[in-house]
Image (cartoon, rainbow, N blue to C red; front, side, top):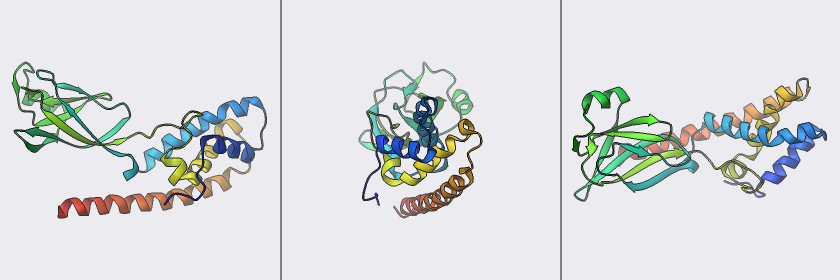
Amino acid sequence: MPTASVMTYDSLVENIQSYLERTDQATLDKIPLFIMLAEQVIASQIKFLGNLTVQQSAMVQGANVIDKPARWHKTVSMNITVAGKRYPVLLRKYEYLREYWPDPSQELIPKFYCDYDYTHWMVAPTPDTAYNFEVLYYERIQPLDSSNQTNWFTIYAPQALLYGSLLQSMPFLKNDDRIPMWQQQYDAIMQTLMAEDKLRIADRQAVAMDS
């Protein structure tokens, strides 16, 4: 559940400044970097339903490379609609697709996909018409800044974000004696979040098996 008083980017910056007890401009200028690094670390440690996203689009006939969404992080599944019915498009390695369908100019119904690069998928066979497809994927949360005051982290994991940001200041501060306390607080909060995350994933898998 979200906290009663939702953290914002501005309040987080103020709290970090207060915890650090630093007013020099060099430190203040680094606070946005500390926050950005903390967001990345937290996101790498947990997956959550808050950033599980569905996108529907259409393939392009004769094109075996498809653009990924702007903040794509990891694909969960892909399906394609053929004659009104949905069929799974199965994940395989890039090398498998190249061996399975060596001539991309030949077109048929796509059966497999792979990560072509960080911003594109590849499918094989090359689509022979503009099939509608649907992708379930984990999305990178919109980063915080002065124009984006809240996101999943500020609503559901404000303490982790605060202490994570303080920990990211460690290399800059070098000898701050409060670091062990921040580390202990962060570790305790993340253990709770990761336990909840594992439970959500297990619940989702159980639902999928029963469906």
